[in-house]
Length: 153
Image (cartoon, rainbow, N blue to C red; front, side, top):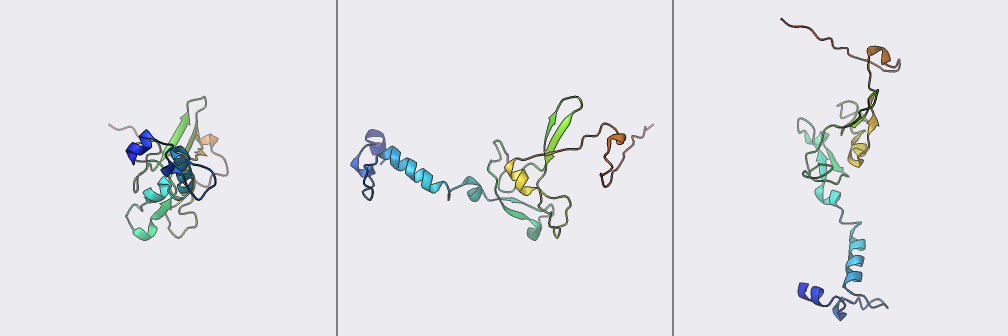
């Protein structure tokens, strides 16, 4: 078959006799690709899953629509991927965007438990609040923690 494909792509055996036009190998390959691309997508085959830190299966997030592979851009495999992505613009003042695969808290009963998963999988980012001082904190910030350096001996 490979020899025939290489030697004679216009051969009569590549014609779909159920259609009025005469197909060749290129036309058949293109048609097969278009018909299969809705069913044969990498993310379905790969089946990315975000496992709970304690590997408790009921808390895992399965069926994440995410391409990539462990050795390429969007480095996700079936069970591993970046837990934090961040882009920083080195301007004055700096601006930053980030995303992580999860939600705002680790409570599996919370409707937002997996709130960022779709955006994370799609490669979307949220602009981060980048404070240069405590005085820059908006009044709408629900809580904050201030860490002070302690000089040791």
